Image 1 (cartoon, rainbow, N blue to C red):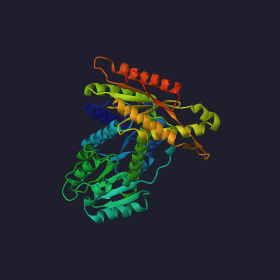
Image 2 (image 1 turned 180 degrees about the horizontal axis):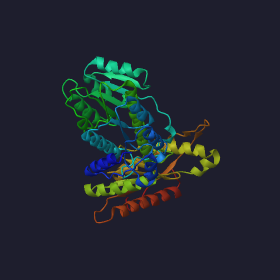
Image 3 (image 1 turned 135 degrees about the horizontal axis):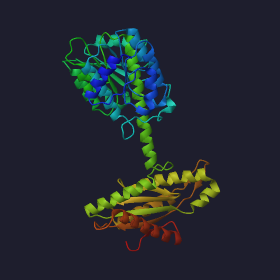
Image 4 (image 1 turned 90 degrees about the vertical axis):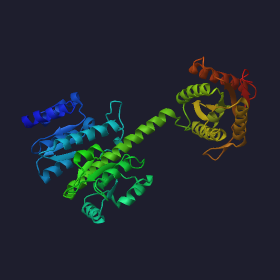
Length: 448
């Protein structure tokens, strides 16, 4: 809200390679949000104006996760109010330029690495069910002296609802690297056994699968050689000092726990979406779209290695009767059971997919005709030998027909075309098996 400050900040940010857009007050900032779509908000508003702007941003779906850095005078109450409203960071004026730019770089880097669209923007709406509720998290505290960690835990005990875990530097890597720990935030003293040891420990934990997504807070004691800019550039999400008030520290840590959990939910949602896009939701095997892509890859790999492969097209015999007599839920149970038995009959590395309805396709890389016939016969016998137990308590006899086609691909022909041909050949063999008694294995004639 001070014109001179806006001009100076705009010049500094532009010189650092950013595209700053300025606003004289909260109302103007909110009005321009839809058109600007900023990556970060840097605010310096006197009184309650800053708190009002942050509250408004957090109340809008499009800006609820937008990083907000607030600048304020040296007033503990003001800092806590801004953090409570939802600020990600509050810096006391006058602000060191290197500190501010390192903090902005840190936020930009985390945005780019976050689960989001190709432009790097976080995907909104993937964790709607958890809005307004934050699960209890775990915060690990690693300090050079045990009494420092115990003091932090004591100060936070009445203000923080998250579990507090105190570790020595020697214990930290081994303990936090266990997947069962599920640590959300790690507070590390910058100087552990030696100067800047905290940075090395943070880098080590960032390389471990169990802690690579955790939020890291560095405790910078007086006299440390670690600068704020260095800490942010090496991956810290926040900085504190021994003089940071407990109430402020609790708010900072709670905010980081919430961000970590929200990112975990987004990541899980994306992974679930990817799984649903690739697998049949009923049986858990690949779907047709995915197996078609895999088959082209198998053709290309077989061409490169000058090896053949086989495909099995499997169809449940008279499956319509199962649905008509027992209902579709029972039919679904039969499909699930058959898919499981098929998977058990195949070799490690073979691929299985549901093509639709009661039809399945298995790809056998490197398999000879004899291998494919043996697997097909084993599959037929295993399914016929054990009727499927359904929830109603009945045993339903099931058989399958199998069509086999083998392929020795040619480098002179299109891989996708050859993939389609081998499936068509297996389909012809399957039709022959169906028309000649069912519950049998038939090989495509030219392959025989």
